[in-house]
Length: 258
Ligand code: HEM
Ligand code: HEM
Image (cartoon, rainbow, N blue to C red; front, side, top):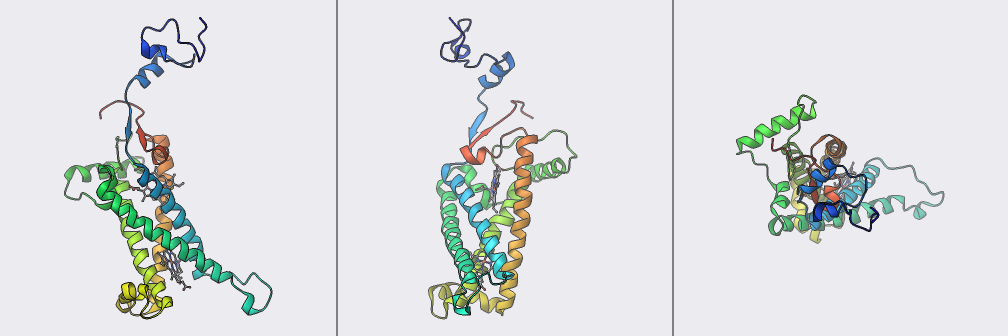
């Protein structure tokens, strides 16, 4: 019998060996796939939230930047025909509403989802081991450690960054953003009833704009570092990264314990 993709290898010693599909699988390859090296970590709602959140934040950054530093008018015509800023602000507010709804959805999932769905919402500062591993991660990212550690969920440094820049960061942008929106919606409107107090707290609209604007730069910095780290860790760490946020499965490249 020919050793093709459709027929089992006649020399196979067992069922597993017989399931070998490609002729070029070596003994080491088979040994590697024989181990169960994949863990289901990020459930579908977490992944959906991740990519929608990333998309909405990208739209908010582009439109927000243009609200803060507007383009020269693009249309030649009467002032009444100009609506460029209107479209930009519409894009910002539409994305803001989606961001708000999915953030509450993500909080809900922290309660009903698996253990890893909760990592985004707390930093285990009371655990000595967490601090030790945080130090290790800092050294690993600074190229001062030779061997990375294995993590099923986020590593401590990622968890810390995600908590401050995303959990607190998004909360900050929602509060300041809806407070700015409340000004436009006017006294007595729902946004004003819920968020009007923020303007009172920071005292003037310019300061509120500046705080909201600074929040954007914090998130931009997070995004740059986050995408760098995701790709770097995909290549250099001992586990899968980007595909984990797509399929939900974390695959380990070796089965060493330490
Ligand atoms: C090409 C773009 C991106 C890639 C490849 C990417 C990749 C990843 C990966 C691999 C993880 C899991 C990391 C781990 O397991 O420790 C993750 C988590 C996360 N990413 Fe991204 N990411 C991208 C864009 C973004 C953007 C733009 C944001 C927001 C500004 C973002 C926010 C987050 C958050 C908050 C988590 C934690 C998810 C949770 O625990 O629910 N990501 N990302
Ligand atoms: C990650 C999320 C967000 C980012 C990066 C972002 C970014 C920005 C930036 C840079 C500005 C210009 C500020 C200035 O220089 O004056 C802005 C304005 C504004 N944003 Fe956001 N924003 C976000 C979320 C939100 C949310 C959730 C809302 C809620 C509705 C919101 C509502 C507004 C409003 C009302 C303005 C002022 C518009 C105007 O003055 O015409 N933003 N945003």
